[in-house]
Image: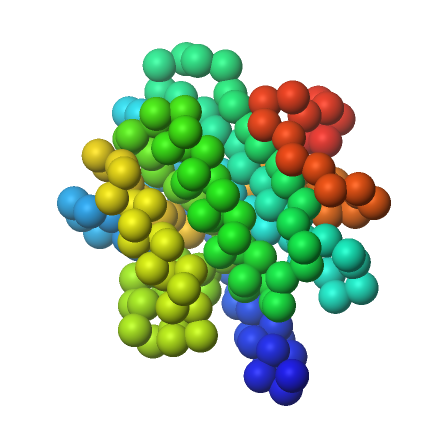
Length: 189
């Protein structure tokens, strides 16, 4: 139990450090390149903003994603509450995996995933350094193969507000819920 508490503390510290950074995003993991990306730049394919919400006293963890398309399609989104995960970092990873599965199901093969969780980006960059997450990492690798272009980028919390709102709202619902594309608009703002 002590290691879970320590992991939660480390996650919170990383979030505070990330919050203090500016609103630029850093592209840390891609198939083709590593560099700096800006949310204002042109992009092709889809951008999928992902977030998880975890609170020790709640029954559920929340997962939210908000996806935009470069060709002007209306945005798509999802929110689900899952049994409460072991830690905030587990929730962040579960949210990413669920968003990936939703993108695969929609046949979106060119996707840039964006998260405000620096440890999640570090984990997929250096999977051998995170043995406690080996099951998640194996599932991640398998799902990643379904994409023609895939990246996971770190963004500020301020740039991830919609996914964060979706994850927080669904976490607190007393019943098990999974929404995809039918989320009340007030959940986003």
